[in-house]
Image (tube, rainbow, N blue to C red; front, top):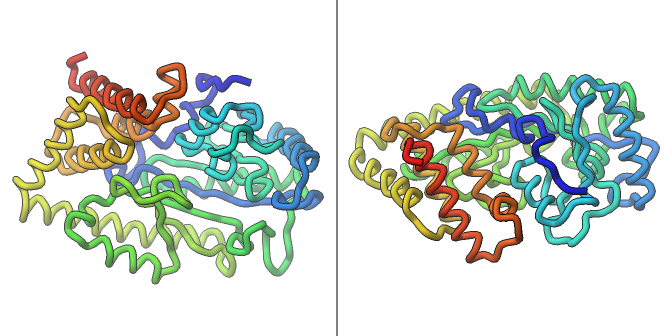
Length: 359
């Protein structure tokens, strides 16, 4: 099987459009539901045959789902390592499902990609339903995820306990099985040195934070993924409402931090951010983390109206397309680190020149 990205609706990334609320600060909102098919061992104890049967049942069930009826099915166990890495860079699959360090993914691992939802199969749990929305739209993501959960629940015997709720491989997901998250860009809070207080406050309110690619990823480029920490003891609506209220406060704090920077350090910040733009426009070699930090600076410049002619949509795309697997795909071959750094700088130069009308 060869990965054909043209088959994926919106490339599998409807969230990059920057069309949602507060899109200058919030890249995306996601709701993920963990579910297991009651008639099979959970993934940690399932054999190859169990996983293949789970996948077959899920494919049959998805045909009856309005949200997944026309979904593209990608078998990760039939893709190359770089193709799996590319799907991970697009946030379509987790690090665990992609098995980034393995030559071949485990049997039965797959992802179904629809217009508004995606479904990971045979990850830590049999099913990981996920819905992304552009900008700050937790309620919209939850509405679609809830609908998809109901549709699949009508077709599959899901593991459920009347007292504990949905049963999952990890105890922290038992109950609702819901993980809601918001990917936010907080350079103002970092530059004003207020980020430590905000992150401590998140943890005190039962939330957690991670990097751009969720669990196991470091925070780079001032991008933070904020999510609920537990799923038991509260309803899905309560978990989503709580996250939305807290993130709304974080957005306000970030907006205020940007106003403080503009007022108290205007020319210093302007110089710093224009230097970031200049480096992206003319650098000949850029590492992945360096590029992420520079894109963060340009994104802040656009959000503070210091730089025109660059859209947030373009910056969202560049965050993904400047990743190594995407560069390898564009070059048509695997790249060494040095080659990737050269290709990354070239891609960023070309994209920003085109945005400025110079291509």
